[in-house]
Image 1 (cartoon, rainbow, N blue to C red):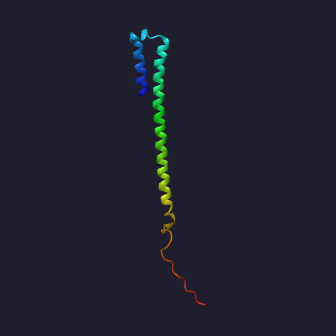
Image 2 (cartoon, rainbow, N blue to C red):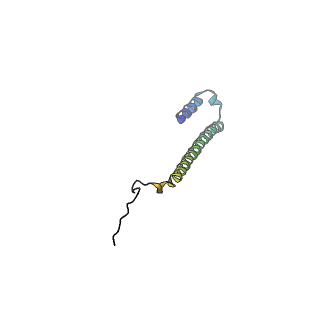
Image 3 (tube, rainbow, N blue to C red):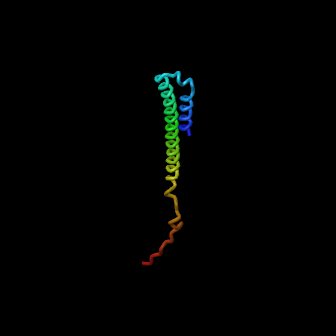
Length: 89
């Protein structure tokens, strides 16, 4: 969506009569500024995504270590009390 808006704005700037007054270097400076801002926004979004994924993985690891403490206490497969076998000699 942002790329389409950027292309449309660039085309509108080129259609304006003021764009005819811009020489080639000035037009390049404007396009460089637009590309710089676009790269900056993408970098910020990428870093934000990386930090969010890293934070969620740390939260999951914390929960797994808390649950790992209680894994040995599960008694569903074992009987609560074992019966003693009386041996006659």
